[in-house]
Image (cartoon, rainbow, N blue to C red; front, side, top):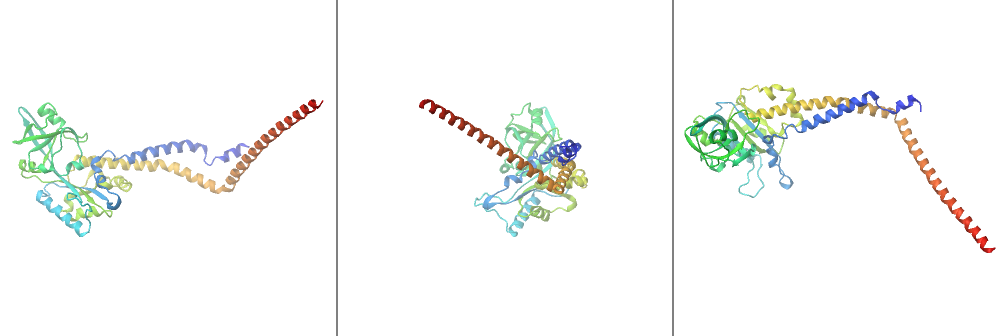
Length: 377
């Protein structure tokens, strides 16, 4: 076979093979990075807990609402909002199919951010506070070091949770469940100590009920709302919340957490940097939302890199398919020739084997004839 014929066997120019393979490997790596972009953000995956299959299958959406300061949303406003959402779902004919009396169609949590001072004896500290209502820990599961979460049914009691650093500064340890600490003049009981998240910028953090925070700070207002809502049709949960929110559009940011790591959302993240990272509205976002936005933007960058590095391998695949199509007769003829040659070689091997067996049998017969003639003599 001539050198020219050997070169025609390759459907791609040899100099493209190594770059195409390397580019494909990088595309795969970045594609994996895209799929893992939000995998560690458990506060963005709460809706998955409520997803159901079978006869009672129901899709859910997780939503977060961030309100501007002085938006005026207090506890009574929250109760009114919850009532309006319930009414909306009744009008839409959506209800829970469970026969349990405690079953809920949807869940929510609300919180306010602020700062408080706390002390015990000569030890004192300033701490960021999250004042919570409802199923806050369903959306924000924390790693407990001692004690337990706040019980929503005991919201009127003066229980608080301290992060590890605050517990050490005030008590010199973290196994302090049941001990008392003074917060802005109120004696409070420590329910538990949790491990503060790495992305939390505050030096000290405590969690208390919104009712207790209202007693400490009479002007307290809720600035974060979180929902897990039925979403039978794409966007239904989002529209339900936006329709019933009492605050104006310029004083709120509504995010559908359960869809923000889909490919379309990641693509929009890198094309709309202002809304993804910079946040055009003058609304202070909590640290966990800023963390999620950075993860979304990073996932968008990985998606872009995946597309860029996939161009060369896809181009090579297209070139190969085009060459195969153009040379399909030659290609099929070569394949048929190889199959035919393999069959001929197989037949030759079978014939050689058969002739060898026949020769052996003939020799045996000759030997028997000679032996018979000797006996006759």
